[in-house]
Amino acid sequence: MNGSFDKLLVEMRRELGAAEAKGVDWDAVDAALFGRLERERRAERARFAPQHGRGVTISVVVLAAATVAAVLAGKARAPLSGDRAEWVESAGMLVAIEGDGPVLVDGSRAALGAGLKLGDVVETRASRATIERAGRLTMILEAGSRAAVTHVRGALIVALEQGAVEAQVVPVLAGEAFAVDIGSSRVAVHGTHLRVARDGDRVAVDLDEGVISVGEAPRIGSVLGTLVNAPAHVEFTATDALGTLTQTHDPAAIREAQVQSGAFTSPRSPLRKAESGSGSRASSAVASEARPEARSSPNVSAKAPSAVAEPSPVETIANAVRACMAARPHADNVTVVVSTTLHLELAGDGSVRTARFDPPVAPDVNSCAVASIYKPRFGHGGDIAIPIDFTN
Amino acid sequence: MSDEERLIAKASADDTAAFRELYNRHRGDVARLVYRMLGGRGDLDDVIQEVFVQVHKSLKDFRGQSKFSTWLHRVTVNVVLMHRRAARSRPVFADEPLGEAVMHGEDVPPDEDAERRERVRAFARLLGRLPDKKRIVFVLHELEGVAPGEIAKIVGAPVLTVRTRLFYARRELETMLSDEPSLAGLRLGFSKTPGVNGDA
Image 1 (spheres, helix red, strand yellow):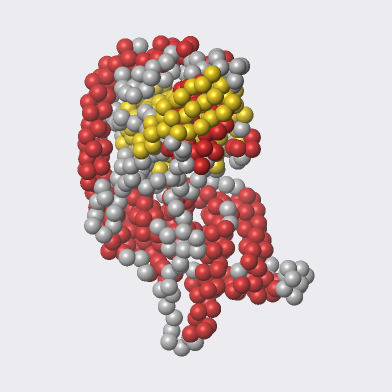
Image 2 (cartoon, rainbow over the protein chains, first blue to last red):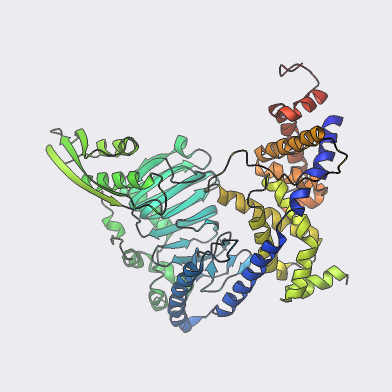
């Protein structure tokens, strides 16, 4: 190494950040920090201790109600302080633990009912953790997984560091409701049931319902990647999602992944878990039975795995167009209403010959939707009109 | 038991006054480290706050097997990394102005002071371009003076890996110097083949 660089380092040791550290508004930091610690201390006191055996059912039901109240209260008081806004939206609540071993949040054992927030790292070992974001999504972190909560404002985003996450997401009309980051790649969800698993840099996504976008994680806004319609099994490499993405719509490939993923036990129905026996190992035995009911969460159509059928071409196209509209950047406080009709001219073999929006839509929506419009094959020829309404 | 050990023990037992004292002792060091690792003023206050929230949460797990400063560095590094991940989904303003609060004696000529401040800004920009893993070890070792063995504990990597990252971080920074006009002269100073970059 050389003297010039070392001299530069000497200067940087002295200068870089030294004045900024002194210039921190410590009064504001102190107030925000100790105010937050006090709030967390109060919340901690309100948390429930873990219950076992027959007591599980009742305690979880009570906790679910408590969390809804907590989330509502959190929304009502955010932003908190006058000069230093602090967003306290919850990432969700731990509502069920199946299997032996603890669920760790930031390295500490978490009890049922523990609230998750931005920055928390959730880790499962021999157990599976069910996390619910009231009214929005239910997520299972499978055994041997580790995920960090990286975004809670509006959409929930988790960075999957290892293992697999399965989620049932209540559809949103605009933007993304949930996303899983795997390295620099993102699987973004508008409303669906999916499972994302990683093994090193290899990523597998099983999509039962809805539409997802797969692409590079953006700094802001929606993922401008490949739209994938359910049912689908997608694989890619985390470092280059778009360059390595492969997808199949063969239901057999998806079913295989579902077996691996195990049960999707509805967190809203802990009774089911208790009924199946409090023993954790018993729960996987009811996997296939629990799954259809789990999907009947609000606003989400219920489908049994055996009923994973190709959605109708009309549905596929309408979903894709809405997803493209939802992916457009817009301010949170602006309501976007789009009402259009997609006129398709079909060839004799059922393929789409021409497509036209009336009234026209934005060019980027056109570009985004074009592949999805021309891909499906109808069972007939002729003309068809698909009304599409979108409101964020 | 040292004074600090007593303070840690009391703070981990939820003694707010002890925690506040611990915070007052270390907040300046944490602020400087966070600033260096963030590469700018950015969300400095928020990240400092988050570091101490994590310290408060995890203090009961601190067993004294490593130095408190090592443990605190580890917490800080983890929070910064988490923050940077989260920041990917938020807007980033290019060339965010760095603090102008660098104070110097009256006797420093204004032009020299301006040059020095520009060098600091430029160096921060270069640091920000280093990948996280390299930047962390570089900041900890070259700017904070933490030994590679301690860094290995902080980042959870073998010492050899830390040394390798340090080597490449330094080499990458050296290469990048020519991208910053205020530092390009230094690049010449240690380039073995002056003129390679067309700046002979």
